[in-house]
Image 1 (cartoon, rainbow, N blue to C red):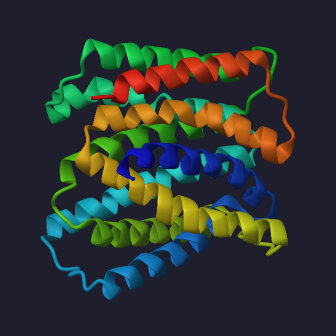
Image 2: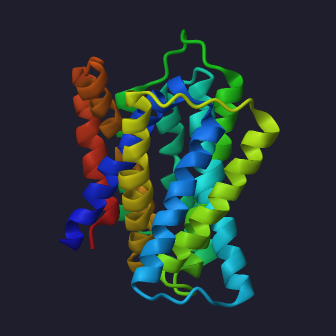
Image 3: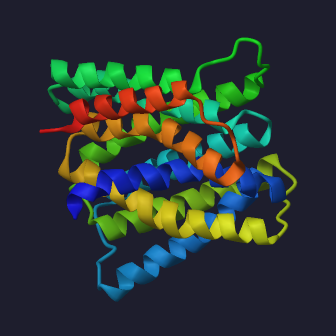
Length: 282
């Protein structure tokens, strides 16, 4: 069963990009995310109480969990929602996000003492090549500069959080870590929506369905799997999974939005799949 977790993570994480497009149509980005993480915090808290977890811990470990939550759930996801809301295509946002394995592998050695083998580097190169083939960057397309900058900031936050979480993964239990991280993200978005936007949420059927999916499947599902994979594996190998997110996002957009998939997309997906296999296999 655990062997299927990476595949499940890829599918759930990719779905976040597609479903965010439905959400920002009916709500401002930070207000919708504050709502999402309010529910997520309550859910994780109730689960931790049910299994009788202890929330006590060293103040430094709790503070670190909260800061990682701000980076993971706050800056990283918030940047995607914001960039998509101002016109950056979800595919471009996913492509920028997929550069995370390169940064993580570059930093995992000096910061975590992990050894990145030549096979992993080959897998990373193939994965990035596959992503570029699937998405490409049309020079003639006008992209919002602020949206690109926002996505790059999110990329830096995701990379930093991945490395930090790997280093801190044994300090607190997984359920307790989820509670602190989700609560920190909720406070972050609450402050952001009060400071930077005139909050709007229209509870249409599309918004409710997309928000429900992100709460249940992305926040409860994908992030829990990610923390588990970081706890049981290396940061560089786990991060290589992000290379498959953009191609899968493209296929989800084809299924749900009717967007066209070309032969180049299929070739890129194949190359990215081989790259992820090389980078993550034992």
